[in-house]
Image 1 (tube, rainbow, N blue to C red):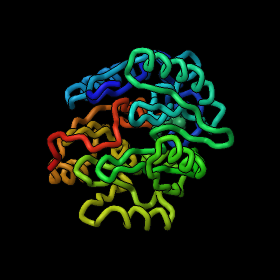
Image 2: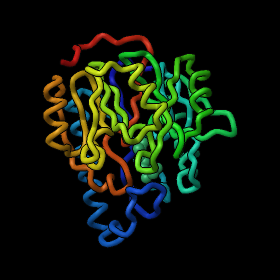
Image 3: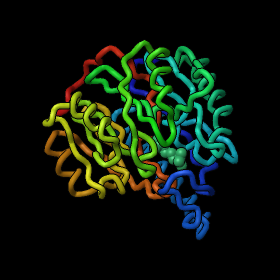
Image 4: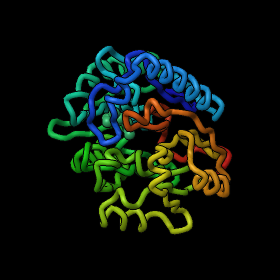
Length: 292
Ligand code: ARG
């Protein structure tokens, strides 16, 4: 496996918004101008790819599959740590057709030496990849969202596969259907999160693990901009065009923002983080320039 910060993207060749499995998805808006929307999606994708390069990533782009528009969100395809990829199991039939093509993609990444091994989950649980299982490099554990998509048992399965601590967090609303919509641990130890997305006990858990000075509370406006769904490398943060609140708050803490217009993907309920998947994450702390 590689020790460079390597991040996977899936080209939007087959992207569209043609069904609705979360409250943000708007197939009618897409259908008003499918060609224009697709063009916009292509240029947004190019802008994201460029921003990720500027932020310091090596970007790997693979092709999706016809009829599986949501493959542009590879964060949902697997959880990757220490060279091991554990493949996702999707809750909705609309996305289950992604499992076979993604298995092929990960096998190919393994053959190329970008990851070391590919594993599958036991039957009987849903788990939607790094969208619901986020590695916190500062604290050295996973945070696992469950409820709308991934099941609670998936958190235990992940702990077994990776031999790491997994802290489960119950998601209380359909609006924050994946953990990455409402929760983002940053390299400086800060955690950007949207409190109303969580059950009371999940909020207690977050507050027990993250001291007040490191908690950045997102507003509803931040959430609607899909700004919590951000990609972070050291002090660099790649996200959708964001709000004055987050520009100020993240800037004050020493983060440098790269804002990208990802509106065609927000129409599917996605932002920058879910359009990516880190392939190089390791559980041992990595020494790089610190944020802030
Ligand atoms: N339309 C996709 C879905 O509802 C969007 C997924 C976005 N991914 C994420 N990790 N938030 O499944």
